[in-house]
Amino acid sequence: MKKLICSLLISMFGLSAAHASSGGMAWDKFPVDKSTDVVALQSGAATFVNYCLNCHNAAFMRYNRLRDIDLTEAQIKGNLMFATDKVGDTMKVSFDPKNAKDWLGVTPPDLTLIARSRASSQGTGADYLYTFLRTYYRDETKPTGWNNLAYPNAAMPHVLWEWQGQRVAKFVEEKDPHDASKAVHRFAGFETLTKGTQSQGEFDESVANLVAYLNWMGEPAQAARTRLGVWVLLFLSVFTVMAWRLNAAFWKDIK
Image 1 (cartoon, rainbow, N blue to C red):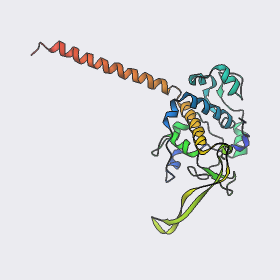
Image 2: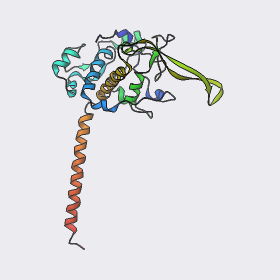
Image 3: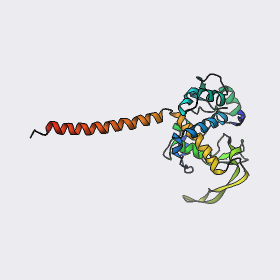
Image 4: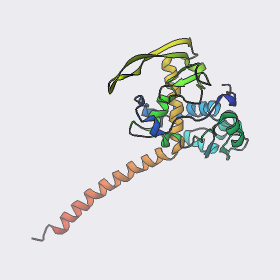
């Protein structure tokens, strides 16, 4: 996969969760089974370093941590390291924050904890990212030529458009149910302009893999912690039964 030109990655990856949850569209549900799918996580990691790590840092994640998703050091060095040659380095880009501010108008945020930071009453951060990355549409009135349903007026363009293709959003004007003197625009679907290199199902899966990796990156030890928690609960369950029966044996002759 070719790395995208850094100048295309303008501004933020998404809105704050507060903005995204205030009257915006309903978020789609991220397929949670992807979170523990090693193949999906590996695919998501490849997409991340090729399409996100051009401008966005992941400064709290080291390349060698990718061994936790069953990648060897040779695979990491050969396929996923473009900004450094040391596998113990953090995932930083050689993009000066001062230049980013001057060129893009805002410094692209660090993505290490992006999934955890976007959770709200509408759903998890993974739900938000899964919806955000799949609801881009062409809008020539915007500086980047793109807009987004989950994050209206998003400054970041659609970096995965070659996979999904180009489309426009259709809106229907209706009366505001709260104020008849005003009109609101209801989303009425997408219209395809050009097809992408992937089908809609394939694109949804590619995005799900990327979001799975972003979600995993926020807490790499989550799967191990969950497995350990299950064993602890099983131990406590067995111990509780033993303690209950032992207590009954101690007190059986006392009336």
